[in-house]
Image 1: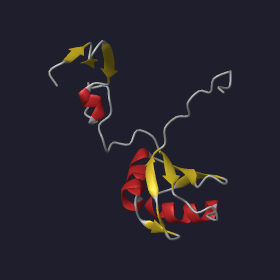
Image 2: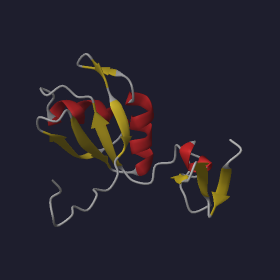
Image 3: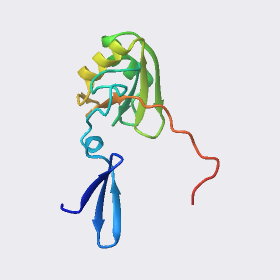
Amino acid sequence: MRDLLCFNNVIVKRLESLFLFLPPIRNVIGLKRNNNEKEVGNMEGSKLYVGNLKYSVTNEQLTEIFSAYGEVKSVNIIEGKGFGFVEMSSPEEAGKAKDALNNTDFEGRPLKIDEARPPRPRSEYRRY
């Protein structure tokens, strides 16, 4: 690694006459860059992504298992995709539900639960 150079928080590796711009090391290993970024484990929102669901799972079933950890405001299963979203009444309740239910067996599959991310904006033009 003698040809590595850090430029503007980006690692640059020289291969012959080709330069590769790699992401900063601290982003690769998930460290906090500054005080504005959230720390791992703190829930900012109350909406959870729930993945690895069987297609037969219903909104009522998810409401029932999540209601043990607080008030469930809404449940939205994306039909035919195997995932959905559960919105709790507070970030604290969402955090408790995530910690308690992540990787637990539900209908023969381990649930994958994480804080829901905002949807990405779609471009005006489709890519081919």
